[in-house]
Image: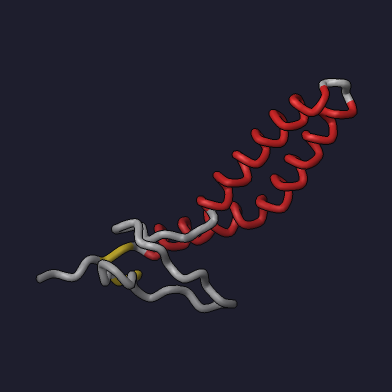
Length: 98
C-alpha cells in the first residue's frame, strides 16, 4: 500500500487559514454584541437587536468552525501547532506532510 504525501505548501495554507479564523473570532463576537446594541439604540427595539445579534453570532459560529485546522488529504482534525512545531502526518489517514 503506497503512502500518501501532502505538499508542505498545502499544510501551511491550511494552518494559516485556521490561524486567521482564530484571530477574527473575538472581533466577530464584539461586532455581534455591538450590532445588537445598535439595534436597540437606533430605535429598532429588542427584535432588531435580536436579529442583528443572531446574524453576528452566526458569523462567529462560522469562524469558530473554520478555525479548526484539517488535513488537506482527508479532512481529519489536526492538532493546533504549538510554537514552531508543525504536524508531521495525519492521525487518521497517515499522510505524511513533506
